[in-house]
Amino acid sequence: MVVSTVLFVSGVTTLLHIAFGSRLPLIQGPSFVYLAPALAIINSPEFQGLNENKFKHIMRELQGAIIIGAAFQTLLGYTGLMSLLVRLINPVVISPTIAAVGLSFYSYGFPLVGTCIEIGAVQILVVIVFSLYLRKISVLGHRIFLIYAVPLGLAITWAFSFMLTEAGVYSYKGCDANIPASNMVSEHCRKHFSRMRHCRVDTSQALKSSSWFRFPYPLQWGTPVFHWKMAIVMCVVSLISSVDSVGSYHASSLLVASRPPTPGVLSRGIGLEGLASVLAGLWGTGTGSTTLTENVHTIAVTKMGSRRAVQLGACFLIVLSLIGKVGGFIASIPEVMVAGLLCFMWAMLTALGLSNLRYSEAGSSRNIIIVGLSLFFSLSIPAYFQQYGISPNSNLSVPSYFQPYIVTSHGPFHSKYGGLNYVLNTLFSLHMVIAFLVAFILDNTVPGSKQERGVYVWSEAEIARREPAVANDYELPLKVGRIFRWVKWVGL
Image 1: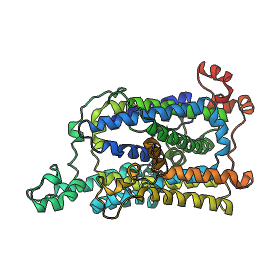
Image 2 (image 1 turned 30 degrees about the horizontal axis):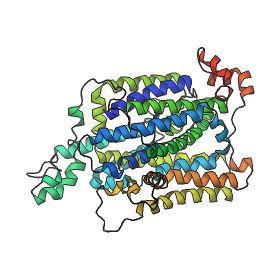
Image 3 (image 1 turned 135 degrees about the vertical axis):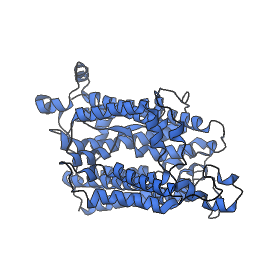
Image 4 (image 1 turned 90 degrees about the vertical axis):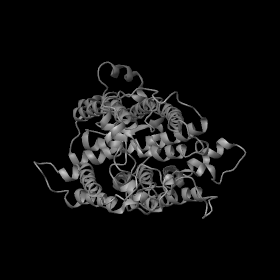
């Protein structure tokens, strides 16, 4: 149900962004930027004791936090504040911030792959072979292996795992993978439970239990719950998401548009992303909606920058969201395969972030030191917060790969204000927040020329209005454009 909701909201918000946002052909969806704070909220100590309706209760908390954070992002965009802030946001800031998002999940990736190494390793290797070694092979003029490395790799790995499952490799006499390990009497079954659970392809009931047709509707999990401490965390995350989008707008505009957007168009795009996240919060996707960083790589590989093509893809997502079995099928993908794919995707996200340095003097000692410090402290400072107060032999109630997200219960901030402790411990345990703060402060205080810093060059509004090609790229359709002409800080 959650997957179907994500597909629906992604399709709707993509259509809205292309029509009334930046107008660039960029897909909107649940970004990895929102994943770490969502996990921190999910693993908050106040939710650990919940048993009845735990999923819906936590989802309503997430909805409330996302809606407040999205409202902040909407104000940031439509008030024109983003066009002022963007003067301080350059490639040297954006690069380590996005890279830190990808690097932050190292504790989840391979540790989960290792639960069934023969399946997880095959998944990673197949995607690497397709995307690197076979990337120049064309079929009917299209680089099939490069463009479809992830779905092809998933299909092959799934088929391999299915054959092993049917051959009885993961079948053990008298053992059932659907029975919790704590309820198993046999020591033999408990020993092999992890392999049965992670290696078999038939342990999930998602596909069987999903309906054929279901329409995702707002407030389907109940009324959102609002808590200021979680809302503040999401407000900061929405700012990081906006920084991520700035880099995506600039990079993609150089590939598909005649000129980069104006600061007003940029603000308009950020404002609409905020509204899109409000919709995501109301529908209950569990994350906010933003421009996916992977758009830039996709456009560069496919050489396709058509609005119509992306709009058609968005409509396809909406149709798929109405077919409940599609969501059930995606949700039934074994975790070890998902972890293998995420290892590749998070590595790609890290590389895409670092690629923003090409707009600056990447060899400058100033930039090398700033990026190096940002990345190092983005890993080291959160590690201090995440490990603070945990003894080596402590018996934690969550898996090892979720331990970085329970920092609110043991972080170093211990004032008499519990809500403030929650906010500070959570924010300083997020890698992307540390990377952004370090890079932002250093880049704007250490002297450097515009060329060295790689200051983004945005189109000037007056020139853009006089050029038909630029107006065609960014001007709003119908009579909506006339309204925004009066609001200069979000217009063309």
